[in-house]
Image 1 (spheres, rainbow, N blue to C red):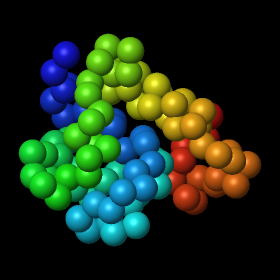
Image 2 (image 1 turned 180 degrees about the vertical axis):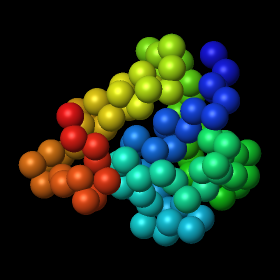
Image 3 (image 1 turned 30 degrees about the vertical axis):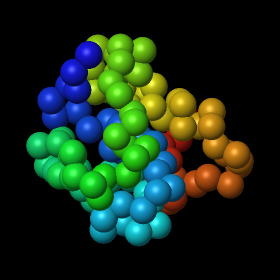
Length: 98
């Protein structure tokens, strides 16, 4: 499936530990990537500076659902399931509460 224009859920919900141009420490979950344009597009898509983890994440119906809202819900749930310690996560760090 192609990316949903203007969605950007995969640039908001997950944490990214790899350096991103403008975010050398990566980004916490729930914080929009600095490279996410207002139109929901990645400003470094196809560029060598785009983190490999971003390039490897491909849209699929199970992850993206039928809407941006569904995609955000699924990606936040996956983020919570893969966190080593949810007890140490606060909304101030970026992750949306369940």
